[in-house]
Image (cartoon, rainbow, N blue to C red):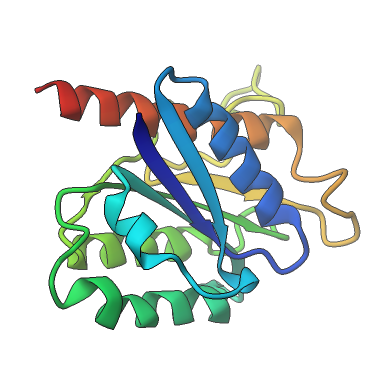
Length: 190
């Protein structure tokens, strides 16, 4: 079994819903064990992360940045993993959600990718063309936010996690999870 850990923060439940979609996609690949780790739920199981073949990071984007709790997870990893490069050569990926269509989500994904690079990890982005980018496109297209670095999703500020993000965003997140799981398999077969 290949272990994929999804470490995320969620202030209002929207990013948790995206994390579940990422997990669903990863679980679609046979022989994959997926664990969701919410940073708000207490101590981080650093040993599990060290045993993971891939770690997928997820955070809401607040004011163009990752959440404070997620930043604290980054800082806590310095002692737990970074000093000895315990995550070296693990695969990494990321996703983020914001209330605005753009919301400066790219900045959050760049923060995650840089964090992964500092740990010696190998980043896996999306390999799909942007959706909703032509006169025949719609918000129902996968990758409607046009991201290659990771999955971007959007939730209306006045709606709960039971209604938003929309299905195309969740399907894009699921695609990212599946891509990471498939890439883990490829890397381990070499």
